[in-house]
Image (cartoon, rainbow, N blue to C red; front, side):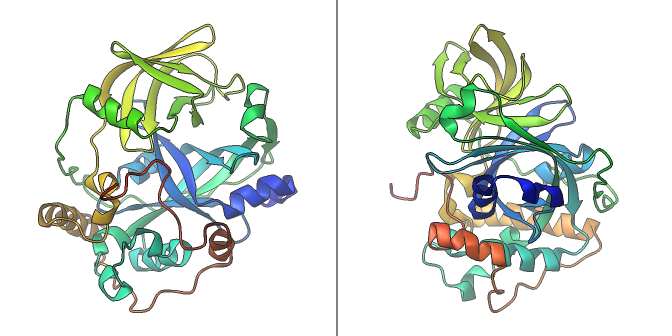
Amino acid sequence: MSGGRNLPEAVLKVIESGAIAEFATVSAAGVPIDTPVYYFPSDDLTTLDVATGLSYPAKAERARRNPKVGMLVEGRPGEPVVSVRGRAAVRDSNLEANAVRYLAETGFEGISFGVPWSQARNAVWYWTRMIIEVMPERIMWWDNAAAMNGPPQIWNAPADQGYPTSDPAPPGKVSPAAEWKQRPWQEIAADGFARNVQPHLTLCDEDGYPLPIRALSCELIGDRFKLQLPAGAPWKGGGKATLTFIGLETFVGDATVDGNTIWLTVERALPQHPLMQDPAEVLRPSDAVRTKLLARLEEEVRRRGQSIPKIPESLPEPTRIALVRRQSFGTSAPLAEGTNLPGS
């Protein structure tokens, strides 16, 4: 978004110094699905990039099939809230280069839980990444969260803007997702409310872009969530939607509008990935989890005609923007808000 450098300085600062964004893609069934992820802008801010493990490639494959994606970057209290409509391009033709870039952008200290790099580098199920480049098509922002009851300010890409395309999809079918234990969605909802953070609701706008927005309030009444959203939310009406508490307790359903209230009738909860349930398992999973992740990783690497990357013995030097982020957080990328740390 070279023209995006004309954004207000406060907006650019939030984009450059942020670490976690809500990232939404659209399923083959037309359901917008939001997950909080580490994001890392390219040095010239042309793209805002995210990544996912090759051991759990669903969000990248959704973006390859439908490049219309959405992102939400929320600054600290009093800072801008930024919503991005973008076109995604998936990069998985060089998995070793992806691993090096991901490390240069995010580091590993934020998820290390005391594990030294000499051991952490063995977590190939995590460091083998698919990178998703997101070129903004439209950027909307509010000066702060309180301003979200009004319309956003808007930057649009030039009408003749060219967008990158994904690397070719590998041959064959995507490997089946590992099966994780699933509980009744009402139990999962109770865990979400216990986090004491407001969830994000995601719907598609009139042009088919999935856009997450944080709810002002949320309660469960029967089999429906009752939500209040800012009046300036960048979509109107209802439709297929997801509601998520930090990407772990995530519910799919149909949203309907009743005056200033949105009701989400729950169809199901999405499976909960163990690496998100317990962040300490990212680098040191249980034997059962490690076995499932490695089996899927090996199958997906084979489909691409590549080898499992050799993770560098020394950490790559951080990028310029990674250093900007570290000035904000004091270390590498932090955990998502509301994360229950082991033993807490």
